[in-house]
Image 1: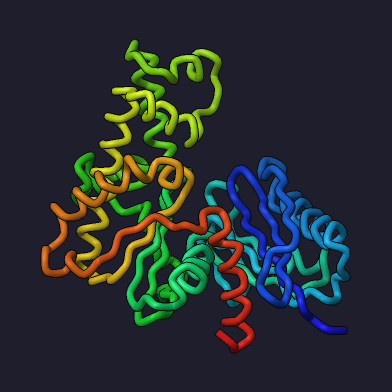
Image 2: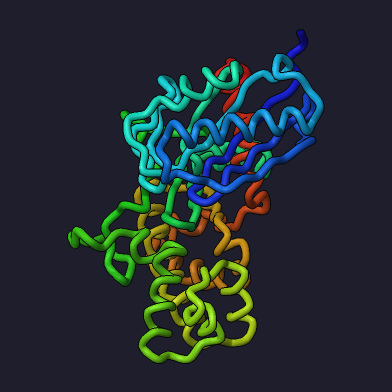
Length: 322
């Protein structure tokens, strides 16, 4: 039976997005279901398996024609063993998701950190492999990173490389020794939204007041609307986050001499016109000028599709064709 399809699964804290690629690397079917991690890892794997089976059924293909399932996980994973060491947003530790999923779908499974997977997609399909030393940073529920050196994904000695969200920084983006002051605790979408909500509860005026009164989740598009309406509170809090992001990226670039930095995540993708110039300004102020001069700072155009396309690159790496 000819193997001509590939499935990529982007396992997120709120959604499981699956896509089926044909042999021309085109997406021919998608399935999106909510993530329910409260019932435990085994139940979550059953949901993923159901999503994969639904995808195959909708596309009208046979599982035997699927080369592999490449999956991105929001946490620290070992691509070789298939073990999730820790995935805090899913409340999973020491769980072999590769073996558990393979038992249910009978298709080979490959796993990778979600931002690493997105980085692989960005490098190959957005930059056409024309980058050498690249940092990819996704700002979302937390902040995750992917590192590329000499054109290769750097996973680190124990697969923890890229966990930049846990770098200790202060409110100005400077490295700090404060134990409860990490990059993602100050500048993730979660942190920025929480700060906006707290200010509204204290009486600050904002077009987002009804979201707080009705206890509705404030999403990236709502923030974009608030910015378009010149909401002072939202613009101020987003600007604070941009300063921290730009400062941290500048410091990391001084250390590691990147040629490209790519930013992603719904917050940045929805608000890049407002955020990117402010991040660039903070970056310019913190990086050594001679090093910063060669860096291109951009927001990914692939969006949610970045990890999906990364699944192709991951399958090629493990098949020896990458």
